[in-house]
Image 1 (cartoon, helix red, strand yellow):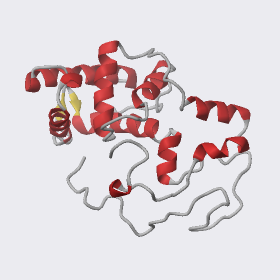
Image 2: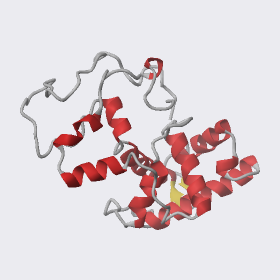
Image 3: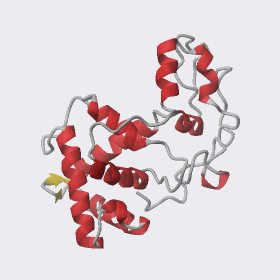
Image 4: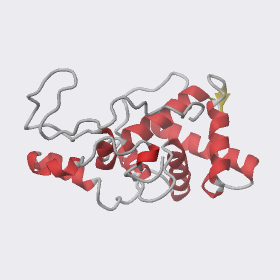
Length: 215
């Protein structure tokens, strides 16, 4: 993936003219304030230390393949979530609670980067970062830094994807028009679209085609 909006060569353009924020007048005041704030400057980091922020930023850019600006500010969204203790409400038996797990795994990434690359993760090249993360994913259930690698990977991707797909730029790419309340939906049924929705211009295209072997 490159910067949003995606070019057609990278799977973009499926919902031409889609603009979730164009629906803002149909949202209630609270909803519009929450959504539109995600388009503003990221707030101050409150949970991550500066070093953790840099490592988390490198991690999220790799997981979401965000090579260049403009990027969805995933690290800021995850930081805000952790600062307000908005976790999933559960954690794996083999893992500490999420805030501690984040601190431990980010520290572990920097330790691995020092051993493999001679620098912190954020200072490593893009290919070096990719190889390091792939090596962790390849461990499967084998422990990494005292925690099952599959569960570490689940932690990272859950938070990364939840943050990324909470952003209106990502909504436009997947054809999501944003919250439908208080307006609601009227056209129920498979493949039915509302007047405010855009139909997929390439419904038979497989977005994962050609991505085999990619994280």
